[in-house]
Each structure stands twice: as C-alpha cells, then as structure tokens.
Image 1 (cartoon, rainbow, N blue to C red):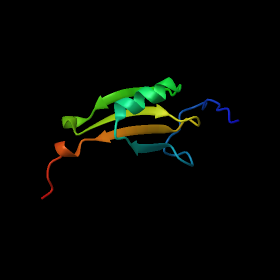
Image 2: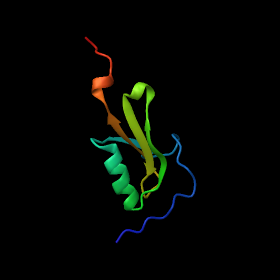
Image 3: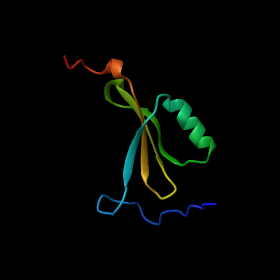
Image 4: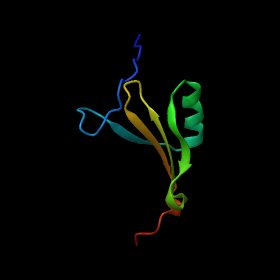
Length: 81
C-alpha cells in the first residue's frame, strides 16, 4: 500500500517533473465535496472566475503537485463567430 509523504517545500516551475495540472469537471461542487470527504487538502475552494465563465478549485496530490479542477460554462463564453 502506498503511503504518501508530505512534500517538504513547494514545487516551482524550475523543478523537474510535473508541478501543476488542470483537470476538467462536469460537477465541480460534487467533486469537491467527494474529494474533501476522502481527505484531499484544498488550498482554494471552488471559486468563480472572471465573468462567471468557469469555476476553479485547487488541491494537492500526494506528491505535492498542484491540481486545478475546473468546470467551464461554455454558454457564458463569447461567440467566436
């Protein structure tokens, strides 16, 4: 069984490997509640982005990598056509 150890210092863009990743969610609030119940540490609760076009929450994985969860509301984005 894998037992995660806490990263001693925050990762930066100059570190080798993965520092940050963004994953899409179809129901950010539901995913946030579920992950919190599983013991995931969030540094940012779900927050709306500019003009309400998306919501983002940020947490850490067991290796200290930042994970952004995003739910995009395409109907609020300006048309490209």
